[in-house]
Amino acid sequence: MARGWRQFFYVPSITVLIMSCMVTVCQAEVKTHQIKAAYLYQISKFVFWPEARKQVENFHVCQLGPDSYGGSLQKMVGRTVFNKPVTIESIDSLKQAQQCHLLIISDPAAVNPTSLHKLISEHSVLTVVDGNKHWDKGMVSFVLEKKRVRLHINLSLAKLSGLTFAANLLEVASVIHKDK
Image 1 (tube, rainbow, N blue to C red):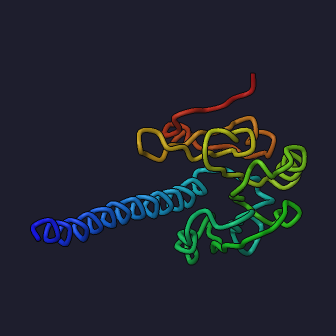
Image 2: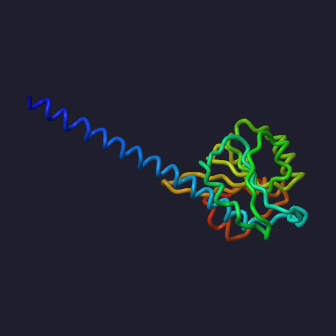
Image 3: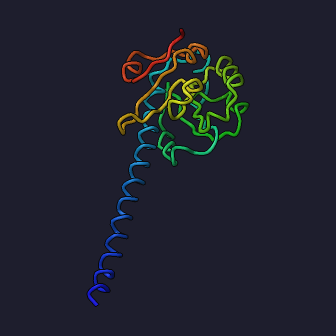
């Protein structure tokens, strides 16, 4: 009978402990998405676009592929970048990205580098990716280093696109890729 009592006590206790750990992991994941979304808005203010790209009604943030930010991008709606209201749009192909100012690429492995380079050179689109594997497709890469979100910046892609970054942004980057 003593064993039954322990089992009755331990099983629910262990279940609660495991579930509380899972909640912590979920909260950490949501927090990471929120941090990245906040970074995106701040980054957009430290990028210098050609004047022709500023002559629009809205600042377009586009996400190519599934929403990798867990809905956190919606917090940018209503804010402004170069005095233009921010809009968020989900797109399915690079062909739809011509009007985008900031393009978040959810699955960089699926993007053809030649097509991407053509897009950014013709339309001055700032590209953003997650992780350091695809730094060659993102001008800005979000990388987790020591459990913190860090920026890797690819100046070669930015130069190809006609974009430049403010010194303040380059200072916070942990890695900067340049032309050889």
